[in-house]
Amino acid sequence: MSSAVLDDIVSFSGTIEYFCVGLVDIVNSTNITSRLSDEKSCLYYSIFLNTMAVIVKRFGGTVVKNIGDSLLYYFPKTSNSRDKQAFREVIECGIGMIELRDVINGKMSDSNLPELNYRISADYGRIMMADSLLSVNKDIFGSSVNSCNKINQYATPNTVVIGGDLYLFLKDEKEYIFKEMQPCSIGHKQSYSIYSVKQKRPSKPRF
Image (cartoon, rainbow, N blue to C red):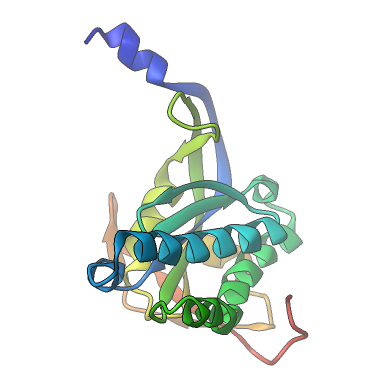
């Protein structure tokens, strides 16, 4: 296959921007769906992915794509690093996903499907946008995408974690509790900080 054909599949704009990126990933889905029929597996993923996509849009995010049992998204308004509300919405989105877990599992139960758990990660960093012939949505690449994928595995089920670069924008927010976790290695960052995030006090329902 010629390089010209390959170049046409994914086309980068050449513009580099900085955004917050999020990832929500089902825990142990491979083992769970191995015990389900194909029809039940499709319904299991559909309930999860569609509900998560609605929550992302509610908080100003843009869904990029689903990656197997996870959903990748970003927050366009965080391109303005002075927009504090945009950065708070990144956390509110993750907490909102956790709050709706009982509702999602209610749908699972109604469909005779097993309960699900999931992990949420978010970070801030450089993003490269690309158009793809394989998708109607723009794809994203860059440091924050890589970071989200890496730190997601450090979250315990049904919790939110953020990377150190995003924490710098949120550390003074008094309504959240940030707990530093064991750092990890990401690319050239040999000791990258990770923080779990919780709501400090009960707030009005997000939905």
